[in-house]
Amino acid sequence: MSLEQAYQDFSSEMKRFNAGNSYKNFNDFLVEKEAITYKDDGNGVTYVVWNVVYDDFQQEISREIVGYYTLAATAIPYEDRIRLDEEESKELGKEFDIEICGISAIEIKMFAVDERYQDVFFEYEGEDLPISAWIIRSIIDFANSLLNNVLGFKALFLHSLPNAENFYISNGFNPMEVNMQPLHSVDSDYKAMYLALKEVKMNYDE
Amino acid sequence: MSEKEWQGQSTDKKEGKDMAVLAKPINRITVIKKQESSNFVREFNDNKVTKEFLDSCKKAGRLFGKEK
Image 1: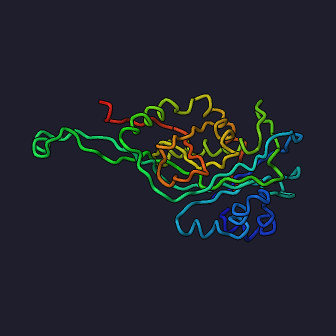
Image 2: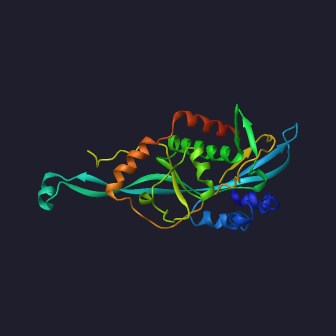
Image 3: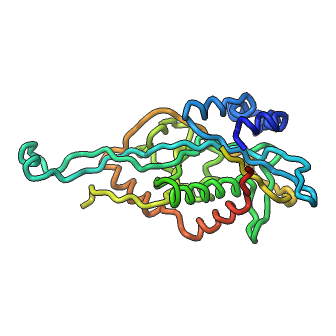
């Protein structure tokens, strides 16, 4: 189902999304359909998470919106060095040149859970976690399947609100140091965090 | 765009911190300079996600079916 279809078929439920009064921007992103413009501009694709209840005949009885997340391509730029060939090295008077590289990544640009599900835990296959943790881990699994089957990248990346940093650390993310802020990430209010899926090979140390 | 469907019923609510866990996009650029780059890349590689954690994430992937 496309985002447009979801707005068409489940308009009232989409409009019910509410992450809390302190998160108006996140509510508006979905409720005011900013997610569609965001997608059309190539800034990110939004996925909606539903809780769907079925009867014994697998017919849908009801559904509630649990949360949403928005994914986009990004990169973490860093400086590496390359060895110049002998001729160039003599001409420039140096052995190495600086090369700007990028750690390819998928950015979780938006992630919000409806307040009806914010303190809800769910036990599945022996593991009891908050719904939000199940969602973020499903995103990681989705990303891992993409990089193994669809296109290559090395990391997940996001900006965390202050009260969510521990949540992301518990779910595999690591904070970036102040002087290591990557692309799209300079803002002291929000902590840049990454989850490394593949290793990066660097020339600089050699 | 696809949708994820959570098939199941929740357990009882537990006390916990506010779980409106949120991320937002920022739009400025900084390049990690070479002196910090090698430290960052080393740390990045040391923090590579474990197979055990990815297996847990696979479980989460199974939990959320894809709605057509």
